[in-house]
View 1 (cartoon, rainbow, N blue to C red):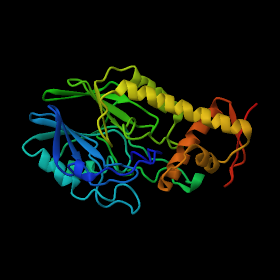
View 2 (cartoon, helix red, strand yellow):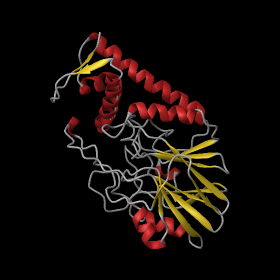
View 3 (cartoon, rainbow, N blue to C red):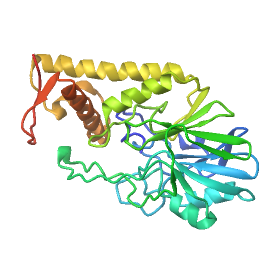
View 4 (cartoon, rainbow, N blue to C red):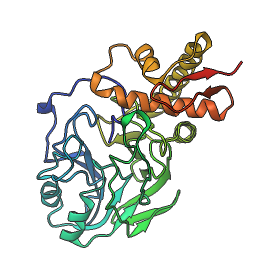
Length: 319
């Protein structure tokens, strides 16, 4: 997911500007097929990328399927697998690549594999044992429990096809298993949910880790990629500038929390109300998860302390 992966209250885009279900050429080695799953959490929908303009092609983030759980972002994937297969007709699918295992990214890997025999390659499987007591949200509710890769890529490992090379870039934080993929011939980076131009990414504990996320942003800042292709929203044409801004935004959120706690103890819902003015109410839970990630990071640094774990749990600044 992107914007449960996003705490910004952006409205949905005009879908007439996007060719849902059709293969759109973005540059010689890159095409996009947009899944029909727009929502406050996925923006215009999940973008599946097709890599390669010759015989061998790879698919990055195959997307959702149409039999998801009601209320989740993968319930509107009807026809997406068929659209991908139509787009690659006459070519050979050699890799089904997944950045991470949220349910709007990886479930379509299985029917694509069944149709083509291509291996599922990329991030590791991820299963979370979580009671979901914190804030009434199951932290594993949006993961794909059936994801089973044939090959897991480590940081720096490569996939080579006919005229293209994909290199894995480990970017934990949004999820612990998140990978970006660099298309070396084009100077392009497929950023999944780690970096998006339309919104910030939710970092949701216990698997989401703010410290790891910040380190991953710094890792991307040190790279020289020409363009980012995120799983949700438009391409990012000034990636270093955006990443600098994202790092600054996270530091501002941390400073906001510390200023609030300097005056009094706060619960997470009270902090969200103070920090996210005008937030779409549907994204309140996502914002709370990101605040929790910041709090855990600050707690690890020894700067704040938490009270007893109750429905009204308080957080306090350490003098």
